[in-house]
Image 1 (tube, one colour):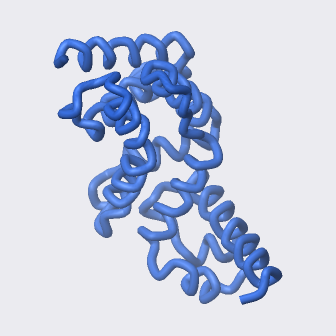
Image 2 (cartoon, helix red, strand yellow; image 1 turned 90 degrees about the vertical axis):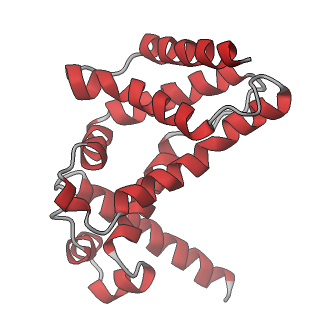
Image 3 (cartoon, rainbow, N blue to C red; image 1 turned 90 degrees about the horizontal axis):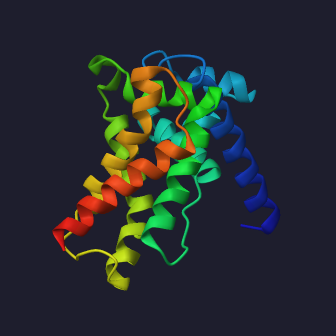
Amino acid sequence: MTQIDESTDAALRRRVLDAALAELATTNAGSFTMAAVAQRARLEVRVVKDMWANKPGLITAALMAYAEQNMPMPDTGSLREDLVGYAKSFATAVNSPTGRRLLDAVIATPKDWDVSGWRYSFFVARRQRVAPILQRAIERGDCPPDVDAVRIMDLLTAGLCSPLQFYDRPTTDEDCEHVVDLLLNGIRSKS
């Protein structure tokens, strides 16, 4: 494949992912279709299906692309600063109108919307993306080796989503630092 083909493929992939995010931000996951994404991207549906064989794969890829673009993974050399940095980028992303709608699509969905398991696929991919923060902390000796990275990141995310989901208010920097400090107190108490 030539360089031109690779950049064309990357641009086409980005176009489809942007269309998928736009579709998710305007409809619920149950109503999300590959045909609607193709229409938004001004492509034939077969082009979208050639890239992603099914709806769960496309939803997961779109949500992960959004996360990668909007929630960088810090590597400051400090567990607290890494977690606060991640928390603040997470809060900024989910406080946006698009982020809020995507959060609603991921969290507040009836079970029958998820018959194909796309939410599970997304959460597994998200965990794999953020787990290195805690792995580096373990390697530096900042936290015990038996700390459960998945549970820590799930608790962090849940704490950051609470203001939006339960109180209909944006997650603040103060919320981010408070949740991180509570988690770190729990991690330190295990040492």
